[in-house]
Every structure is written in C-alpha cells, then in structure tokens.
Amino acid sequence: MDSISQGLFQAFRLVLTLDPDLYRIMALSLRVTLTAVVIAAAIGLPLGAWLAVNRFRYRRLTIAVLNAFMGLPPVVVGLFIYMLLSRSGPLGVLGLLFTPTAMIIAQAILITPLIASIAHQAIRDLWAEYHDLLISLNATRVQRIKALLWDGRRALLTATLAGFGRAIGEVGAIMIVGGNIEYSTRVMTTAIALETSKGNLAFALGLGIVLIGLAVLVNLGIHWLGRTERASNW
Amino acid sequence: MSSILEALTADEVAPVAEAGGESILPLRLEGVVARIRGKTLIGPIDLTIGHHGLTIVMGPNGSGKTTLLRLMHGLQRVSKGRVSWSLPEAAVRARQAYVFQTPIMMRRSVVDCIAYPLILHGVAKPEARARAADWARRIGLGHVLNQPAPVLSGGEKQKLALARALIRRPDILFLDEPCANLDGSAMRDIESILMQARQAGTRIVMATHDMGQARRLASDVLFMYGGKVHEAAPAAAFFNKPQTMEAQAFIKGDIVE
Image (tube, rainbow over all chains, first blue to last red; front, side):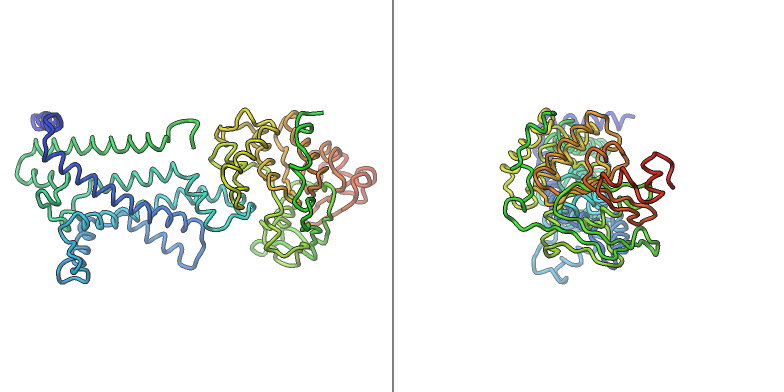
C-alpha cells in the first residue's frame, strides 16, 4: 500500500512541479503515438471499409489474417523493424534506427490491423443496412465507401481510440527500435520500464498514473471534438 | 385537400423527361426469371410498364411482389430473360428511384439525408441542402430539419424516403408497401405526395396489401400469385371483374395462400 500511495504522491508532485523531464517525455509520447495513430487510421479506416464493400477471391483469408494481426507481438514487430532499419538492413541507409520516426513506424504497424479490423466489422454492419439504398441511388464504389466512413464515424472513432490505447501503452517494439535514449527517444512507457528495473517503483507508478491520466484526457478531448455524445449530432 | 398537395408544384416533382429529356420508359420484361440457389423466386414474367399511370402490385405474402419491384429496379439479378429500357443501361439507374418498405435512414440529419442523392450526382452541397430543406418544409418535415433521421417517427421516415426518392425527379418510382404500419394521417400524406408526383408525370409502380389504397390510387393492377403475374388489368376492370379465382378471393378478403 505504501508504494501505491507513494506512487500517487509522485504523480501529483511530477505534474504540479511542472517537472521538465516529465513534460518532455509526455510530449514525445504524444507526438509518437498521435502520429502513428493518424497514419494507421489513414490506412486502416479506408482498408476496413474497402474490405466490407468489396468481394474478391481471397477476401475471407485477408480478413482472417487482418484479425490475427490484431494480436501482433510488439517485440516481434520491433525486432522485424530493427532488422529492416539497422545499418546492415535493407533500409539502413535511411538512418532511422533509434529515432522517434522508427518508433512511429513500429507503432503504426502494430495498430493498423487493429484499426482496420474494428473498422471492417463496424462498416460491414453499416453496409448491410445501407446496401440496397446506396445501390439504388447509383452511388459509385468510392461514394459508397465515403458514405460508410462518414456515417460510421462514431464506430470508427472507437476503432481509432482503440489503436491509440494500444499505442500509448506499448513498450516492447519502441524499446527495441527507439532504444530508450534520454532526451531523444525516451517515452512514458520506456521510462516506466527503466524506473521499474532500477527499483524506483513509486516513481514508476507515478509515471504510470500520469500516463493513464494522459490517455484519459486525450480520449475525452477526441470525444469532445467529435461531439459523439450529443443526441443531435451523428 | 392536404397542405402537401397545395405546396408542391409540378416543376418540383416533374420527372426530368417531362422537361424535354428523353424518358427511360417504357420498361419491358421479357421471359424474366429470378432464381436464388436454384430456387425460382418469380417468373417467367412478360410485361411492359408504359409512360404514364400508377401500377399497383398486389398479391398474398410470398407471391413475389417485392422481388418483382427489385428486379425491375435492378436490385435483384435476372437469372433468365431480359429487362430493357428505352435508354442504355448506364443511363437508367439515375432516372429511377425506390422506396423501401422499411425506410433506410442514413445516420445524418433529415436535410442531409434528402440532399444526399443530389450530392451524389454532383450538385454542390450548399445548393443541395437548400433544395432539400425546401423539399422537407413542403412535405411537412420542416420542424425536424436538423434532427437525426433515425429518430423520426415511422410516418416521417417514410416521407423522408419519398422526398429523397423524388428530389432527383425520377422518370419512374418504385415503392414497396410504403404505408405498411402507418396510421391514417401519415398514409394520407404519403398518398398526397404520390398523387402529386403522378400528376406531374412520374410513373409509379407500387406494391401494397391495402385494398382501399389500391382502389384510391391504381390506374392498373398487377396481381401476383405463385411468383407469376397472375392477372394484369386496368384498375376498374380488376376490381369489378377479376378474371381468376385467386384474384376474386383476394379482393373479397378471403385467405389466399
């Protein structure tokens, strides 16, 4: 219990004293995660809608693979990207290893299948509802996908937030490709892992509480911006 | 006379064809059969839908009314035979509209739902919304203009569906039991809009179970039975002197299976 109460105390202290290191890693966490979420949503949402609307030969297999990729092990993804970006790897010339960009790539790869899969399921239900209407109105394939994405935006926001939730709490992949370098690639989760390994449990817990608070704030902010809970808006 | 009949002008509901464009009608079905997984749903059917009038499609449940409408509109695949219009296939879909028995409400405001077909066909959004708002007001949806369409009452949903179907001024309008589960007032409003559209030149083909409505609206009747057009006749002839036993029983209100 002592460690938990000390953790709470540390969390308040870190936030209230405007600890510059804390705010630096919070900012980097948000930058990496939000960028990854934007990229993953830009790929995953249209992909999910496209899979819902189109029929093709290996559609079921594609969906099954996509669903399986929702559970991609972060460490394996991190290792794979590490091998791609390492100096001897095919993309080594880009010099991206141990940079925030590498962390963004890793997170985007991890959460794209999650966002696409949830989006596909939401859009599939909406497509079943809209199918006859959109065909009757002679909507083109692109127009159908646009309508489904727009009208399904609440469910798609949930898909995106699920991606955000997974990315903001992710540690395995970004530890490998980012290296947890202070002032460069250290984010909230890697800092927590480091402090835990050093035995600073209360401080690590404090960081954890701040991280949870950050995630809640971002979710609330996105819901507020999307006006999702107002009865008059759809 | 209801306010709806007074409000809509012929210019607003007249099909594009009436304004000088070439009509997609007549619609011809020649030996048309619809099958799903080897089971024949309807057919073979031969019929012609001409330029004017309001055809009522009647028949017991499962007789193929909805399948016939969907087939004519292109929502149901033709397994055998031919469905042809006077214009090429690519031109006809945009010139027809369909109102479903259970109105499909997009998750948008009333005005955006009505404007959607216009936006799909290249009308600028502000203009489409302005025209949709005008339409909505005239058919009695002015008070719910910005409400989400899915929360409307059954009658309001069906009016919205009708406005969405008519806003592009189709040559032909298909309706699948549009007044099922509606009360008398809502039904009167829907019928008023239909009569207005018909007078302006829109060809209407409508399935209904309601004998009173069929008598009020029909210019001719298709009686479906067992997946075939059992009887096709002008309305007066059908109601006064039905040719088949099944149609006679149906008109009398007997149970027809």
